[in-house]
Image (tube, rainbow, N blue to C red; front, side, top):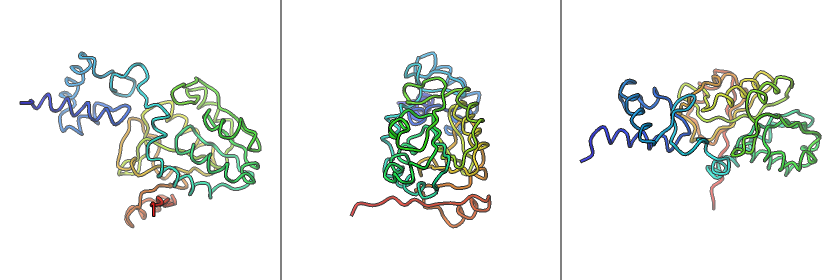
Length: 266
């Protein structure tokens, strides 16, 4: 018979299989135990080599790179991301300077822009994504393109780190298109990695309009580091069909909710 202790530790491993990183507090809340009990569980799992302690929390022991590879993330919720990107492209105006951060939803937005070459050739694009650079043929398909340098993050096909985030401060952007790891029930956006959070905070400061693109699987979730309340964004685009109460709560924060319905197969 499985003891409560073994059952809880299996539950911890199951939780960590679904998120890159989780904090002690989050795991304690999810398993309904005290922080002290959770720390003992995590110490035991670490001693067994099943988890690793990283900056911001703990993760499954899958090697030095605990992040989910970009290709794997890009293969999830594809239909939802396409719908969100299709809705987002309508916000872009000729001659805009836009930021497309490295994320799988912006990959779909870049593909949408390629379908509108007359618009794309007027745009100045700022990005830290090698994948987006490739989609735009090294910048040949847009008016001009600036790549934000930094540490090359091979599994994510991007540049990241303090240099990347600091370079962003030099720009005045028309629009910044951002995504996020989690959006809580209190509509607080959060992320798992401090570098990503710093990048997004600087993007919010640099842009005239900030657009959050987030699929329905991220709602009601909490990550490790807070980015900002939803009120920092001008638009939130999602495939989640929010209730009138949720919509009112968002729009009371002066943020416009744009629904991106998923096209169902006939």
